Length: 310
Image (tube, rainbow, N blue to C red; front, side):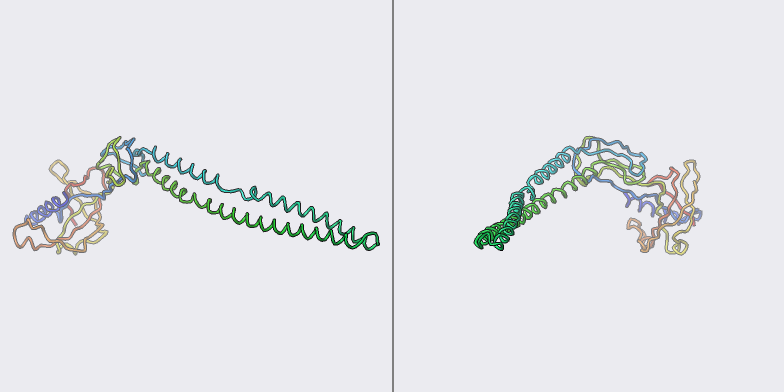
């Protein structure tokens, strides 16, 4: 379509150049930056409220895609995380036996230490033999050995349980990332306009099954529209970016409607005229594409022809 418009524009342009009463410097057609909005998820389109020609505001509600399966998958992952959490060992509870044993040994050593002090006093006073001190000391040594063994067993158990717990606590991390992915898909299932603009075309209907990447609608901001015209090399010296020009269109009454426009872009590369122009002279002409930004009062449409005058 754009190729046909391009050819038609150039035909009009060069045909007009032959007339002595040409009242414009270049001609072309209006266009806009069109954006195709596509689905980012797969699912049934449960609601779709926009129509072609409708004006949309940024973040306006468009519709939503069915999220039941995503929601159920999220709940399944959350339950898996809970199940993993229930398997994480309680280090304190599972080593409490050793803590209790250490407490008993400490109490016993305290009692034996007091008994040893009394025995030493009796021996020093001649009321008891030294064998009594030796017997108590032997018991203290035995208790200390048992206490050391218990401490080693406790340390080994704590180490094993801590390693096990660390591994189990790491298991849910991939599940957390999967939930984040689902949350992202859930948010993308709620369709909102990403920009201000006019709905040009809709490609789907309510209850259709969408796949990721499928176009939903086309939108363009028509508040400012672009007139693409083509100028000759001799006219190029007159055109500068930011330059104001007069934009002329048919007013429907046999006259011309005039508006102000601003040159927003000039092609840095020349283009040959189409091969459909038969004469050798016309085929060797070079033209340059120029974009003119025009504030749209609602009367300018995509594809409409317009003219400019420097």
